[in-house]
Amino acid sequence: MIVAVAATQLEIDPFLTAAGREGELWPVAVTGVGPVETAVSLGSLLAEKREQLTGVLQFGIGGAYIRDSAVAQVGLLEVCLATSEVLGDLGICYPDYMEYFPPELGGAEPFCLISPLLERAKAVLGNAGITCHCGNFVTVNGVSATAARGRMLHERWQGICENMEGAAAARLCRLYNIPLVEVRIISNMVEDRDRKNWQLHQACVKAGEIGALLMRELS
Ligand SMILES: O=C(O)c1cccc(C(=O)CC[C@H]2O[C@@H](n3cnc4c(=O)[nH]cnc43)[C@H](O)[C@@H]2O)c1
Image 1 (cartoon, rainbow, N blue to C red):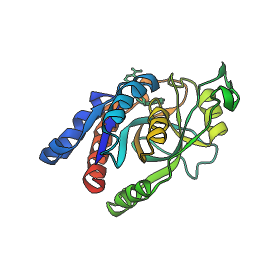
Image 2 (cartoon, rainbow, N blue to C red):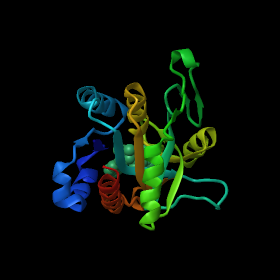
Image 3 (cartoon, protein in one colour):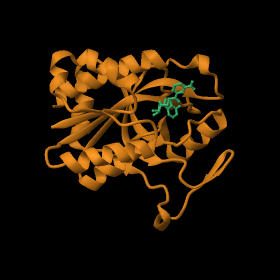
Image 4 (cartoon, rainbow, N blue to C red):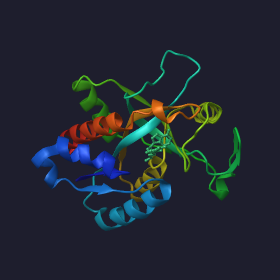
């Protein structure tokens, strides 16, 4: 059994619409925004259901880091799959520099998400003709609101996508030895903040549709 989770009802509603009657049988949860809420809600869910679970599907929206080379730039409303997750702002925060703690103090250590379930998810998207970018994701407590901060996190982690929940789910899934597939649709570029450039609604709708497709094919 796979559980589908997203941070907000804004992401879950289009998922339920796309899932239709079939979705009534799927376990689904809203985890809340940010790593702490995710750890609390997903942690109690996994503690209860871990014996029955063969995977966690986390879907939602995220920001795309702007890359130096235009070759593989991820764009608005494009699909990203995480091959790793890291807590990108756990440490000492300077305006455009992060100093991470040593490993014994919980220093930033990426969680690898490569698994047979991830390979199946890639195949599902490929068979549906959906192009997806696979790469490292970075989880933050605060949305990066400057291009400089985004560039710094991108360069430090070779990150493609910023979000606020993935590393918490990755840490829990590692604890319980359950594979995690994290898929995000780009709602915004990580740039000097300009809210009018965000495509929040469209990204939530697409995230719900892709989430439902993956649940249908992976369950
Ligand atoms: O600034 C606003 O008005 C505003 C309105 C609604 C939502 C937001 C968010 O910041 C959403 C955070 C939510 O979405 C994910 N997300 C989307 N883009 C990013 C990003 O660039 N950096 C980090 N997280 C992002 C995140 O996972 C949260 O669940 C703002």
